[in-house]
Image (cartoon, rainbow, N blue to C red):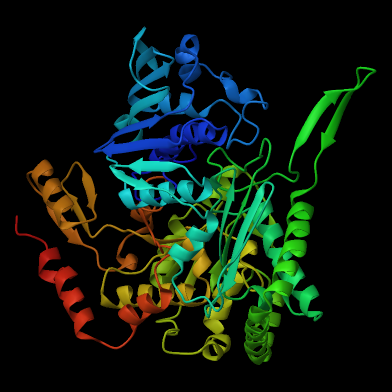
Amino acid sequence: MYIGRLGNGNNPGDGIYVLLKEIVDNSIDEFAMGYGKEVRINIQMNDVTVRDFGRGIPLDSVVKAVSILNTGGKFDDKVFKKSVGLNGVGTKAVNALSENFYVCSYRDGQSSWARFERGELKESGKGETHEKNGTLVTFTPDKMMFGDYAYNMDFVETMVKNYSYLKKGLTINFNGTPYKSENGLLDLVNENLSDEPLYPPIHLEGEDIEIVLSHCNAYGENIASFVNGQNTRDGGTHLAAYREAIAKTLKDFFKKNYDPSDCRQGIVGAISIQIQEPNFEGQTKTKLGSNYMWEKQFHDESGALKTDIGPTIRSYVNDFVSKNLDNYLRIHKEIVPTIEEKIKSSQQEREEISGIQKKTRERNKRTNVYNPKLRDCRYHFNDKVTEKTQENIDNSSIFITEGDSASGTITKARNANYQAVFSLRGKPLNCYKEGRKKFAENEELNLLVSALGIEDDLENLRYNNIIVATDADDDGMHIRMLVLTFFMKYYPDLIRRGHVHILQTPLFRVRNKKENRYCYSPEEKEKAIAALKTGVEITRFKGLGEISSDEFVHFIGPEMRLDLVKLAEEESIADIMSFYMGDNTLERQNFIRANLRSEEELEDVNI
């Protein structure tokens, strides 16, 4: 309920990172209020320690601040006007979900501490100290809840870097390495550019808002967004307003009715805003739902309850961008021709393929979601959302698979409330080797785009999870690569936002007369053989169609194993596609030899 999901650490949205972030957010809020210039984070195995040098928790409130709901200074907006969350839940959730939780507050030579196990207070005390003011928290996420988990240090490092970009002057020391930014979001964009920008990034700062933008020769949009220091990877009101403001401002500046998508094609940038009491969609705070910069209730002279609201986020962002970006372009006239040339180039390409795609799109709109390749879920019906529960929204998924046998198996085994199936016919077009015109002419890829709902804008994505499900053989791996190449080239933000996954399916079934065990690796197979001991029968699965729907239901249910397709901001899409899909170079041959498991390694052993 409070952390969004459990997970084992393979996904940056997994609960163990939410726990870490809840503790660090408190330290960041202290810095934002002017207390402490350093935060230390140390992760060793599964033990996490966070030390800040803020004011420290009031000594008499240490226990209740980390264990009793609706307690803490954040409820007074005079103290924390623009913190990430004001619900007083975060630290309590960390305590409840930790095997061990220790907190110690240092204030003016005195300390107060408490130790908990799975949320239960075990001991506490007070004393004198020579430590500097601040708070120390140490916790270990509970294996009873999270299972066999591990922190991915790359995910944590990205989190730490983002904090440093958003809080200029703050030093965050992570496992002995300091991170500090002097130029805010400008450093974020410059350090993470995967393609050469067409002009130096524009950096604009105002009260409660900071933006950066440039263009490069790439498809899609790559805009990072933040609210009160929180990385809103799923966007929300502020990102939608920023995207709208960029297009509107450029159209007004050039006095031409350019299509908004042409103005934003290839854009790279970031936006950060500060809001009083932000309303996020979900406790994990990855999407902003607020409409106003601030909203307050008060009693007038007669005692009547009134509401006073600030400007809408849309108007605030639009006003800031339109005024400041327009002024910037008038002063830096040397970059104006480059920007307009990029817009015109995008417009020309779009118009060249629009005629090709027109017939396919018209056909898709007429047939609506009755896509001949798509077996939709009840979550969508005639493009109208039904059963719009948070569970169905979060779990809404589409499996992309190949062949009637595999798609039939998944269709029978799926949860039809929120799982859809799209069936490919053989190997899709290799988009790396072909231009956009070929993609526009390809009926199957157009039907896939229509099924996803992203013809006009990624914000219309119909499924939260896009799951590539292919056979565990050479053809299956090749199909997987072709599908990922398509997304990476034309819709990279689907990957950046964490929507694209690879379905893991078992390679083996190990069973005796009493028990079945499904194994995803040779190592798991050997453990299963040792556990079941006698009368063991082993089956090697090579195709999804070989697995019965009765069995398959276990592999796409609550325990479904997914590998998130990750794309770091600094990774060059062109370089990645060239390596995996380009000429068969010696470098790639050596990579394959070093990482390939031979079929012999996967064959059944004799029992």
